[in-house]
Image 1 (spheres, one colour):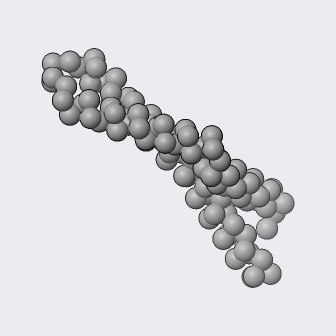
Image 2 (cartoon, rainbow, N blue to C red):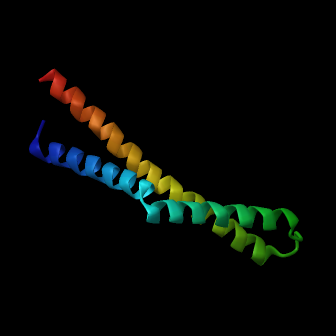
Length: 95
């Protein structure tokens, strides 16, 4: 494997480890919990809002999307790191 590809795998593994550490940290747990609560609050408000309040509906939809995306991005970074670890292990066993 070219050195550049190996470096990229190592970067992805590092990113995954950083994401995992973040999710386990007090800050990570707080921010993930906060994002989840923001989404829940927005969903609950959305359920009761009058359909004519389109600006507020759009704002609530944006809050929900932002909150969900925040968690998705962190989990994706973690998964990319794990997949890169597996790829590197497979390459090591083939050598």
